[in-house]
Length: 196
Image (cartoon, rainbow, N blue to C red):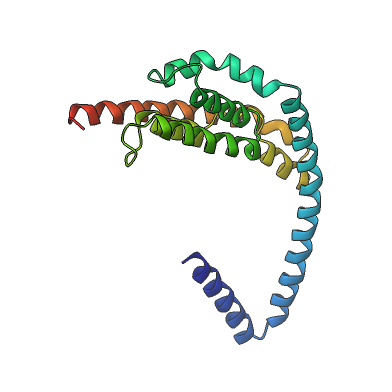
């Protein structure tokens, strides 16, 4: 559907420009846009490499493991039915730590492993368990201290202060995490009241 909308916009734009005798505007816009896209991509690669490199050093230095240990009390509260020293909680903690540091690429494998471990503990394999639903809520609304992608984009686009968004992003992700966990608890309680 989205591809059709994009195609329709392009065709209508070219048709209108051609009908008005200003097809040169289309050529100029295409040339300018492609140049800007290449400039942005090259700048983005440099900034992204810097941030991901710094975060990778932090990961190799044991920061994710340290964060995982610090988050263990939170995991006990979020997942009361799970063994706090089991592999499922371990993968959940690694996923939360990677998301906290903005390491989306590192968080995804931990998230997949966490879901696999949670599914092993799930008594009804056809239905997501409470722990799986909670993990999905926590993962999709992950609290992020260092929004690496956003910082790289702002730096690539020439922002004078690319890190100005760190605090607002952190607060926004804290609010989203609180809302998602609260919604998870409320829906779970409502489901239990209905006897499901």
